[in-house]
Length: 420
Image 1 (cartoon, helix red, strand yellow):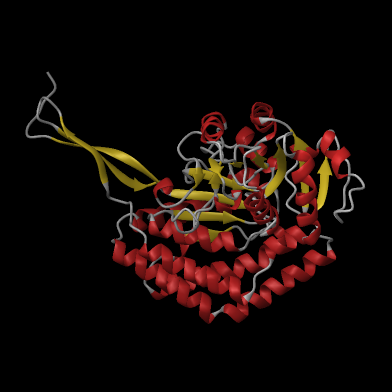
Image 2 (tube, rainbow, N blue to C red):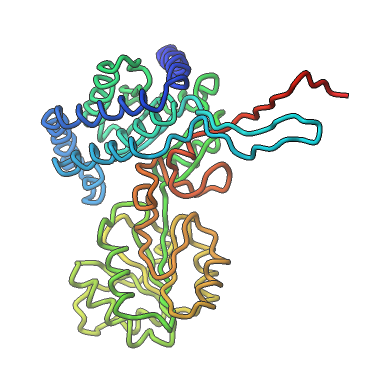
């Protein structure tokens, strides 16, 4: 625990330094990180290859290996995303809700950094860069704890970040990493409320539950999605097939990938074989229930069909598996309410009344009309990188970009005012 306390103290001190930086100073640090990423690409890839090798030996799934994998293109993308954060407006110091009270006091709220963020995440080394860049842009320090399966990759990336910070004269302790894979350190980290101001777990349901139950630090949960697409009877079926394919196949291992497609009974006999044929092209296994199973069994569409089990519609697949059910709009909304993790849900329809009903009654962090769930992402929403996609209702919802990593303080300016 003493090592974590030392890290916490160092992070707190670094956070105070970061909070005083100008936008130009923060942007210089970000550009240095992008340049250092490009300079050390070979080093990072070599460490990542060792993690991948160990992951295969341990039997990690293809979906988890894809999350873990870094390539030259992905590192180039991380550098490009870092430069995009440079171009984003700096929210720190912005004043809003300004007004003059009847007694002449000038009152406003001013955005300030949260302070020190603790982030626990698994199998995604790109998160290390995403968090660091957003934290630095908003003047926050960070203490990171990744999974053991990506330890070498994360340490290499943290070295990139700290080397870049050193080159621009900023403390490397602004971004620290808990290198010891001992799981007891997670429990200790969750109790560092004296130093960590906000905790963000990015992992499975078990990690989220653990943080909610045991953390003494405010927790923002996200990154788990059981995502749905409801295909209404009025939907353009050709566009619907493209959207379903994109939402399921484009990157199946991520939290905004499609898990369940719900189809209106009026078009099920016609549309479901089309879905199956499209999914067969992409080697997607279908898990239908009820009438959907009857339609898809022995149809000649080429897709693998396995009857849905009792827990399948409450499963985040993170792989090429797709649940299928037939139901109308009201039943679909009820189904989403029962099984969704409040992440990303979409309706495909040409009936604006139905679209409005879906938008009003489905309360996920992002709700779509005639669009893929894959758009629930900080970069796609124009926020730059993201720390997480929050699925809770307090402080932040959806992709957590720059503004979501700030809080505010009241600023009150008087002229000799005293309270009567």
